[in-house]
Image (cartoon, rainbow, N blue to C red; front, side, top):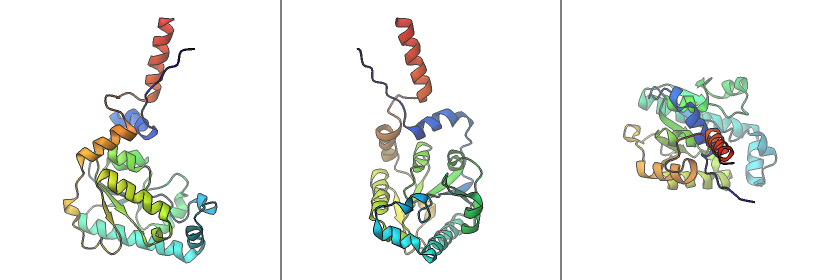
Length: 219
């Protein structure tokens, strides 16, 4: 039997290609990519005992959201733009609205990011949308991250690969957000290595359909 290799976009790149024509690319807001860091359902089975014990303490959950809200308020005041919270798919809207002091987006994450001047994140894979849209990204490491070496490593991997700024509650106040920019070369290198190989401009379903049609015609 003959074997064939098809090169297709990564999942996030697929969505980007499918929706790119309908996206409004603007700089009207700041988007925070929520990843349910301290209250994700998977925390119940996480192997990191230190982190699991930390999140079991309800007060620690409150401390985390207080810190994130304070961080976002600082950025809001510095850039004079509204904050939009893009929720993790498993985060209940009503519950989240009680934790965050800012607008909870009803748009898709891709749509929210497309309207952003700046994206704030920990290590959410939705960072991929900001990379594809060439949006500046600030990584934020909360006090809760001290209890998870796994998540700290993820943040530092993004920082290294994309040339991003990494802030915490001790550095955010004096950071000059007006000078934030992207490392175009690193962004493009990341896209080609992980999301969308050079020259690939069709979503997966079209690539597969084209392949099947050509194979049928050949036969």
